[in-house]
Image (cartoon, rainbow, N blue to C red; front, side, top):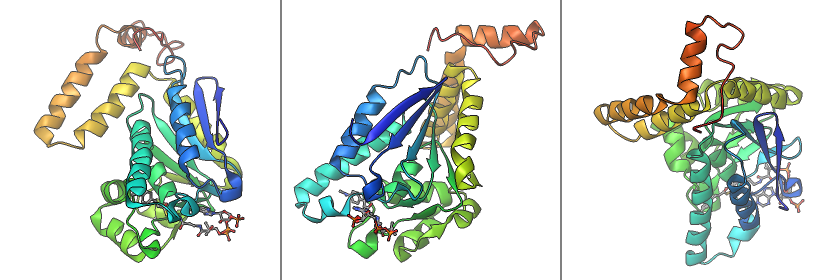
Length: 263
Ligand code: DAK
């Protein structure tokens, strides 16, 4: 793959969007590579993914404006669908995905970070949805995910004004969970990912599904989703080992575990 690299460190997979000359802007080739990279992740051995951008300046500076500028209506719709399909694949991926936002996260860059489960960023990160200044609406889910993450008032302010915000403001409004000096960001992401990887994979996967699916429905239906995913953990080796370790007071094994079977 030309534009996405994938490395595995222990049980953590690191996806890097690698088009630094264009500040990792998303063109069709990048989206295809990302799609393929996700298809190639071994979800039985990897337990958490990190998504980041190559270089020190940019996570993803948006959809590729050069490629988009000549699209017809039909082509624009197809491009939007391609992006949305990949972003949705990330959002519903059976592993948690941490976005390590190491610089510009504009337009499609902000949107792809919002398709991840958790966002942390470097001090030089800049977030924004500049689309209305380019004569378009956010097209990769920005109007939907930003409003869900930071509330409609703040999302509308960011989208209507097209004003970028810095890392500290992104932290204040809850768009990111934490801000780190640039040189510490990847280590922080790996530490968080390794911590997630220590836990029972079926339970973590079911928590992701419960939160994501539950947020789409009313509380009565959401609780039913949780009940089913809770029940789904039982009779798995993860549940037997996890609870067994506690009951046996095996502090060494407690919460370390757990076999990959039944994943
Ligand atoms: N697309 C293409 N190339 C880009 C790019 C982008 N989004 N952002 C940066 N680049 C390229 C620059 O053209 C430049 O290339 P060369 O001239 O060196 O060949 C190189 O990256 C370095 O950029 P700069 O020289 O501009 O670097 P600066 O440090 O001066 O400025 C910047 C950095 C991030 C402030 C600036 O590059 C910038 O403003 N970039 C554009 C940011 C932006 O507006 N992003 C949002 C794009 S719109 C939809 C689907 C998707 C979307 C909408 C609809 N449907 C189909 C429904 C999504 C839209 C967007 O994401």
